[in-house]
Image (cartoon, rainbow over all chains, first blue to last red; front, side, top):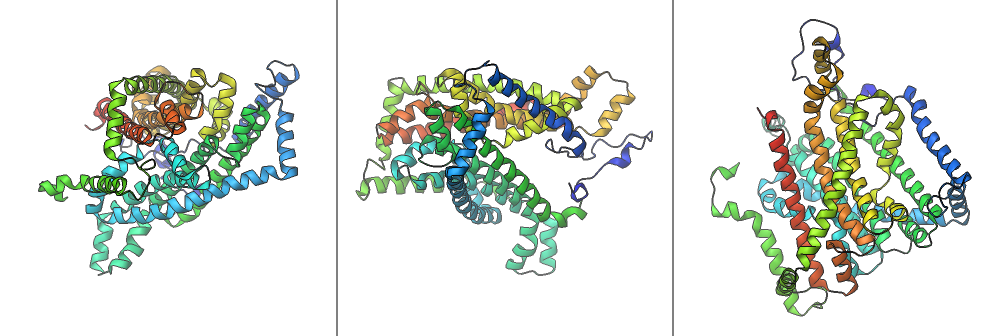
Length: 287
Length: 256
């Protein structure tokens, strides 16, 4: 992994063993808890393999009833059958489509609202308190009302996913824009930038990292909400697959859906990390 | 900031849009353009709310939800904190559980509901298990990060002063990680609340705000649903204010 691209101070010069202690204000090296080094990977996979073996053993020796923990082969069987008859792909695509629609709607509107709120303190004062209050209402609380108004179709689902994307996008975008360093803005004034070029070449680039944080949170939220809304009332999608399996007490179907949900989650995580590194590459020189 | 010159207009600003929205709502409800089944008037919602307060439904449901929320939160946060400290301090634990926890984090929270309900039942145990799991993740991740981000200089200082492990944890690691731990606990509080409502809506109907909303949806009582939506917002705001207050109280040494 391109560690050298990270805009982090490595701080290695201070561990050189000199007698003088460095000032405590030194920025800590931000190591993300998720970063796994390749060498550790072997020990890392040991645990999942052990768990799988335990699972297999429990199925083999009938330690837990099949309704509680079906054997791994049953899960693989559901995945294979679902893949062969196309229902697995269909359900996955339906779910992905809902997330994409909700994320696009919530993300685009959220970016616009966030830019307005970030640029104008007056609007912020008017809208922010209401917005923060609304954001405190768990999204699921809206669902009974949404379902009563717009039925069990795709509309309430996309609205709910859109809203859960919208909230972090607005918050982060407005914050990122409102916190553009004053010195940069003054530089723009000195160079007598127009309003537009000030926005385009100063404000937006300096807010990009936080805007991206908002989008990433928004996507994660949207994905979470998708599963919830599909569980609550749906006739297709991965959440439906889970609810259906649960009702029939076919836990292998539930577990198969969990595997797919987890796999997509991991792929999203890797993809977003990749995009972020590309997007923030120009920042590497800056510390 | 213009708020240096306080005036009625400035102080009133946050209320302009909510009041406007409520006005539009009220006019819509009375205009006859939409079915009052879908858009109940504000006074209908207020009447409904008053009745809910009067017969004690609101009180008992609120209490049931909060108790569930807090029980799950305490269980999940305690587990998350202990496990997070373990991950922060032990390289072996990090290598063993790191990848597993990372994958666990990528699985959408609600995907656990069908499994947990099969394992723990749709009653109280299943709900608590789900709420605890919701509180576990953010506490764990932030505690871990907090410990991992302790500046190396502090570690060296401890080495120079020949601190033993316990002293290091007590006087350096815990206070140093405290701000991040609190970030984790605060989002755990929010997640636990979301999970409480979610579990009440998705699992067996039982006393609680989500259970009441479930009934409201089945009986098509929009005024009841809107009223409980206000209650949810109110509780959410109170919870986050409480968390902020507690946080600034407990890490006030940091400001000095």
